[in-house]
Image 1 (cartoon, rainbow, N blue to C red):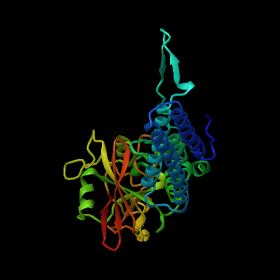
Image 2: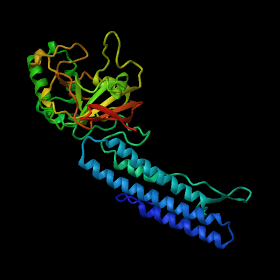
Image 3: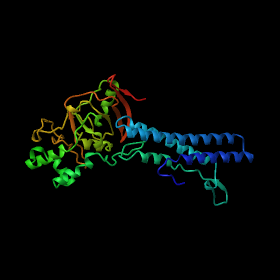
Image 4: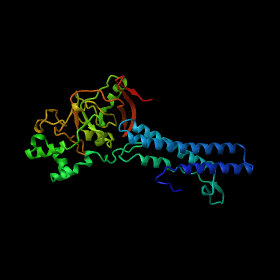
Length: 356
C-alpha cells in the first residue's frame, strides 16, 4: 500500500481495522469459535486508536515545535514516534491474526501455510522523517548523531564572509588552528572580522553547555544549578552527538587537577540547553592579540573558535561568571550519541527538577 506522503495515513489504519472486523464476522458465520469475534473487535479498536493517537500526536507536536524554541522538543518527538510504533505493531498484529491470500503460501509438498506479516514500520518512518530536518536525535533509542548542521548554523553561513576575503573553508580551518602569536596583522584582521560576523547572543538565544558525566548527578541533586564558562549556540552544535566528535569539536581534551573531565575512550556526557537573561555578560574569548583579555592555555585558541580538527566549525562564547539559566532549561544525559531528557530547571525553586 502506497503511503500518502503529505498526510498521516490514518484512513489506511481505519480501513485495516474494519477489514479485520469483517473477516472476524465472516469466520463466525462459518463456525469459528466465538472468541474470534471479540478478538477481531479488539483488534479493530486497537488499530484505529493507535492510528488516531499517532495522528493527533503528530499534529500537536508539529504545532508545538513550530511555536517554541527550547522546551522539551526531543521528549515530545520521542512520544510521537512511540505512538507511531504502537500503530505499526497493531497493524502487523492484525495482519497476522487474519491470514489473507497475500499472506498464504504453498510449500514444496503442496501444504498451505501462513507467512507471518512483516512490520514495515511505515508510521514510525513517516513520523521520524517529519521531525529530522536538522539532524536532531529523535525516537527512543534512535540515533541521528552528527547529521547535517542546522541551516541557521554559522557553518552554513560562513561562505559569504569567506568569499569576501577570497578564502576557502579549508583555508579558514588552517587559519583558525594557527597560534594567535604567529598570525600576521592581516590575518588577525581577517580572523576578527570573520568571528565578529557571527550574530551576537541575546536573552532568547538557545545555548548549549556540555558538562562532564560526573556533573550530571550534581545538577540532579541540586548541588549545581548555575552555568558558566564556555558555551555555544545550539544551532551551531546540535548535530554533534557522538562522544569522540563532541570532545574534538569542543576541544574538551584538557586536564583539570591532573585529570581529564572528558576522558579518552568515554561514551557519555551531559548537555544543558538553555537561554539566559545574562546575555550581556557573555563575551567572545579573544586573547590580547585580537583585542581581548582571555589568557587560557591550549586547547583554547584565543581567536573565538574552538580548535576543532574534524571539520566542525564552532564559534565559542564565554560567561564572565556563573549564572542561573532561564526557566525551563533542560538537562540531558547523552550515551553513545543518544540524548535522554533528565531534568527541567525551575526558576522559582532554582533547581533542576528530575523528569519522571
